[in-house]
Length: 187
Image (cartoon, rainbow, N blue to C red; front, side, top):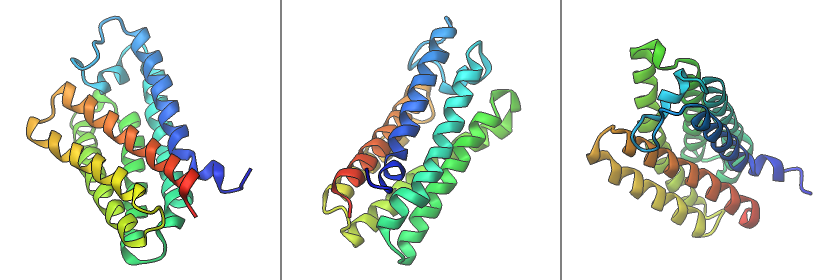
């Protein structure tokens, strides 16, 4: 097994950790309804330990993926470094969501909106970096462009629970697919 393989799969590991812990949190909160409640509602419920652990773990894995997974593939150009740095910032904002729960009031709201909007910018910059570097052929930019288009398409619908859930699923799908493309097609 390549020494790079675990780092390249950190996007998959983070997504799986989040999804498993999210499902545990959902199962512990009988009042939570998928698509009708905000995901962060689970961060202050009976399953808060699971949800918040999942968010923090996913954020940490996103930071690892930015520097050890996708970062080296994007290269040393300014755009590539910016993409990796923005992805690390997305991970830090995600960790902050798990720390500053809904009980934190406005701090949680600001961190949550910052995460979603900043991650949309991150996907755009990484998309441009992948296109410029051609390190993953056209499959890498295609995955990122599809995730970006879907994310932008959600913007007019506002911050409803369903839109938030779809945005999270979009980010998860993007991270997993990019991680897999990098693992199996990357240099």
